Image (cartoon, rainbow, N blue to C red; front, top):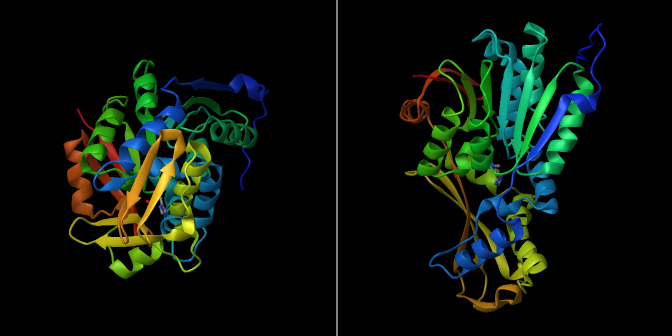
Length: 340
Ligand code: AVI
């Protein structure tokens, strides 16, 4: 990897990093309230944001290495191949804002391409995990001795609300990578893009990663791999409920189920009860009754086509200026430009 060294004296790492911890309702209560509402609803549901406890985050990293799960590799291919083109399509980005930055490993291609143009760059990562932000920020600051980082630890919408308060000085390239947009339904995706548009100025860019519609078999295999890693990732939600809320789910009495709904363009993921059973969640004082074959919906992963992406851009204050695809044309990286 290229290292960016400066001949001038470089500010100490601590002076180049600010982390804002955004207040939100107590995370455990959110989890408890959402699990109670989801397991007493008809049909039952749990939110995918709760996949990512410590084990879930590691299982997701493993998913990204699976032969069947192509999106991460495809997006990495695009970013390492076209990073210069992406940042050159608009001269003078001095701020990179990344929503859901995680380990920020994909971001490096973009940061390096901008630093090749000019040395002055502020990186604003927003992520729910303060630990991920601290670790990734320190690594980035070590690699790029002049980079400045202002990080926001909190949920997407809290991060965007905080950013609205902040004076917008320089041209910004926002990043929303990894097909995270696919985990929102249409209304949520629109709400999110509008909120993001509100922290940008006309002419600013958004690089949006979006997985493309394709052969249902390829899609279902990507979410139901032969090693069972995605099944473990999904069923770990039950393990988390057992640990944090005193549940007595027996994960072996449940199956991981994946269906691609071609009409909606959506991979739907469920936890299915293999037997009729009653599960006690003592921390919530509820008994959850499940029929044999009854499903708990856990995730939607929407897939897009280029027309749909253009429409979504126009409806949320952007225009789709350019799209880059990987060689197998499985995944898209889209440059949306903010319009007046
Ligand atoms: C994080 N998100 C974009 C992944 C996806 O493809 O929807 C989460 C995932 N779920 C199962 N495999 C990957």
